Structure formats: structure tokens, C-alpha cells
Length: 307
Ligand SMILES: Cc1cc2nc3c(=O)[nH]c(=O)nc-3n(C[C@H](O)[C@H](O)[C@H](O)COP(=O)(O)O)c2cc1C
Ligand code: SF4
Ligand code: SF4
Image (cartoon, rainbow, N blue to C red):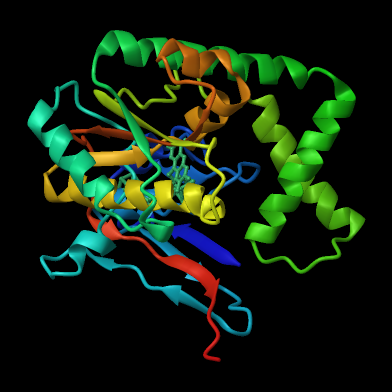
């Protein structure tokens, strides 16, 4: 289990941790103006609160490391060579500053250079670099999630959704199954609270206000033995994209929620002339980041076996 603490003796009440956690709403101010972790809120352990804290007041500890599991430790942001990989963070706040076209082209070239199964390179890139297009995507994705929220008013569907959410959260926390009724009840309550507070906070933007969104698809018409790798090929391209963005002084974030909406709501790809023969495999938001990262957060636990 990961335990997180805030050392209030170090905290200067700057609020950076509350701001960065706005989507998950796990950290909130108490009456004295200090931040605290809400009991019934679903933390995704991204470590962003630790990574932004200028006072190093937030700490994550693994209280019980399961057998064969390891963590990647927290640490300071330094100028070491490996920093490109270690300090890579998903940005949630983009500046209202456009990105020159040649930088976007350079970034797409880096994505194209990533490996792909059988070198099939079955990836198409759709660049949205105008506010109008990104607003259209934002609106369409928002409409999709509003529809989902309405579905949550059906008690049967809601219970199923919450049970599944709770189970995936417990798996994430390495709680061994089978789960007792009491355990499942506790985590269902957490997920229910998250659901009832709304799937997203007021004013939430799925595209994070980024000036550029790259939609990546792969054509599924091809019958090829590498077909099973197509999604991975796109994720690799996105990983190269995020690293190139960091090298270029840009920030990025993968937009899985937009991806789900685009795959489930067939009218959204049509807005951008994406043919039905292509599957949406990933979206990457790119722009100049606002966030100052002060630390590298703890990662894991992950199973590691020396075979
Ligand atoms: C496939 C995928 C989809 C993601 N979708 C979203 C998203 O929709 N919105 C978002 O803010 N972050 C998204 N993320 C970013 C993750 O939340 C992030 O990687 C995680 O919290 C760890 O933080 P880090 O990338 O800064 O280390 C996504 C990441 C991946 C790999
Ligand atoms: S970021 Fe750190 S210093 Fe700022 S409010 Fe949060 S815990 Fe306190
Ligand atoms: S780890 Fe991420 S989700 Fe959890 S409290 Fe920190 S910022 Fe919020």
C-alpha cells in the first residue's frame, strides 16, 4: 500500500498540490488553509502533488511491498542525462501560447521514427492546432461524458459501474482477491463518492487547454500478422512524441479520455474527416507547460522477477 503524508511544518500553504490535483480532487484545504488528503477520494498515485511541492512537504511511502515488487524512488530534478526520461511529467496546465509549425513537424517526425511491428508504420497523424478545432473536440467529448453521467442515473448500470471501478482500484492498490464484502463495500463507497461528485470538476477540459492536439490512428483494413501490435505501435509513437516535446522545451499529455470518447462516439472522428476504416489509437496534447516540477515522484510498486 502507498501512504502519502503532508508535513505541515514544511508546508507554506502555496496551494500548488491542490491545483495540480484538480481533476482527481484528492487534496483540499482545511479551515486553517493547510492542504490535506480527502478520505473518500480516489487517488491515482500520479505523484504530481509530490512533484510540484516547492517545500518537499509531500512524501509517498510504500508501507507493505509485496514479494517480488520494487519501486522507483522519488528524487530531486537534476541536470543528469537520464533526466529526459525521469523528469517526464504529464502536463495538466498549458500556456495560451501557440507552437510554431516547424516544432510540431519535428515532433511528428520523432513519432514516425519510433519502432513498429514489422516496420509497418501503420500510423496516421491528424494535427489540430487551431482553437476552433480543439474547441469542437472538447465540446464533442464533453457531450459524450455528459451522456455517460446521465446513464449513471440508472441504478443498475450505476451499481455495475461502481463495482467495476472499485475492483480496478483495489487491484491497483495490490489488495489480494477474493475481496471480502466489507472491503468491497469500503472501496465502492469511495468510488460512489467520486461518481456522485461528478466524473469531472466544474470547468474541466478534456484537452487541458492545449494549443495542439495530435490524434493518431491506425488503419484496420489491413490483414497482417502485425495487426495485434498496432495499438502498441501508436503508444510507442506517443512516447517518442512526449520525449521530443520535452527536448523541445514543450510539455505534453496523453488524452485517454478523449480517445475513449472518440472510439465510442462515431460522430466525433467524422468532425475531423477521419474515415471509419481507421481506429483512434491515441491523442497527445502538446504545448508550453505552466507547471514547475520540483521533484521526481515515487513510482510503483511493480512486480519484478529475475528469471
Ligand atoms: C494511455 C494513457 C492515457 C492517458 N489519458 C489521460 C487523460 O485523458 N487525461 C490526463 O490528464 N492524463 C492522462 N494520462 C496521463 C496519466 O494520467 C499519467 O501518465 C499518470 O498520471 C502519471 O503521471 P506522469 O505521466 O506525469 O508520470 C494518460 C496516460 C496514458 C499512458
Ligand atoms: S505544494 Fe507543498 S507547500 Fe504548497 S500547499 Fe501543498 S504541501 Fe504545502
Ligand atoms: S498522487 Fe495525484 S491524484 Fe493522488 S493526491 Fe497526489 S496529485 Fe492527487
